[in-house]
Image 1 (cartoon, one colour):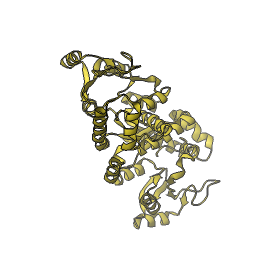
Image 2 (cartoon, rainbow over the protein chains, first blue to last red; image 1 turned 60 degrees about the horizontal axis):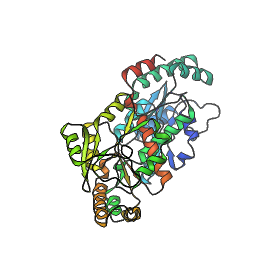
Image 3 (cartoon, rainbow over the protein chains, first blue to last red; image 1 turned 135 degrees about the vertical axis):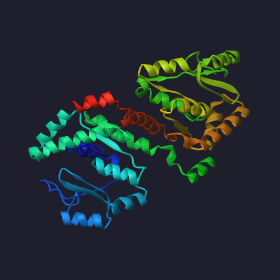
Image 4 (cartoon, helix red, strand yellow; image 1 turned 120 degrees about the vertical axis):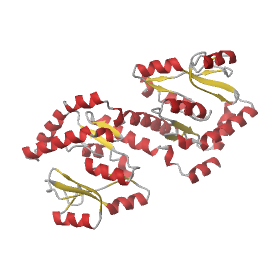
Length: 194
Length: 194
């Protein structure tokens, strides 16, 4: 799941929470400063730059990338554990990280969340009041770059109506779980004897 | 959309009718006998064998195949017209016909509807009381063949619970309409100026 900050990724995820109850959500590590209300290990694992670099060196990250001056990365172990236990995993990544995961795990489903318009995204970022003008401009430039690449993704949700966006989000997950290619040889043989 | 007779394709389609209101449904031509309650041009275009063979000769069919002793085929013109006007089209085909359409239109989405079990399919076919024992056996043999090939399809819906099957059916269509690859160059450029 990829999309500029301010695009409503968290809102969609919260609205879809009952549906997502059996899907593991991967918590990223980041060097960015904690915002008011954020808690350690809930929104992110907040780490120092040296700690982050140690995670890179010890190959503890599935992907990592810089975004508007900070490091973000996905700790490998929790994702591997969830997948091994048969759970699906939801990752919230920016473009560079999403590409890394797709290369390592071609079976990953890539979902892009776009704002109704760039103008609306700018309005939302200013309304949030957490970023300096400089950061807002950087985020907007980055959002444009990601939008240019949106067709690399499997799916696109334009978040102009939250109910519809949530419905599309859930539909995509439901559809991907109905992939005929997921049926194993053993399942097919057992079905043919049913 | 492919699945043995008795698997509930029509029931799913009827239950999803409000959702399908903007999707064209292709009516097949067939040489099979009309069943009580069936109307010309509603369930099928009922034609004679010579009429069907004339349609093949004049290349008026998108696909055609034999199924349990009768010919079935999709008239080309209505499908082409609907697609040109921007409508999606739902085709109900057996395996051979579905493969022909996928070869001609690789963008087609292939959906397989499976019964809860082969035993349950047999029970439903007998319960319907429209077929001779010989036809029932042929339908079951054909169903097994199609099930063996189900992984050629994009999606699999097991119709063991109608509400869930309808929800999956609608989700698959909604997800396919959210494909990022459907965004045209012009749409992307216009979005970037928004």
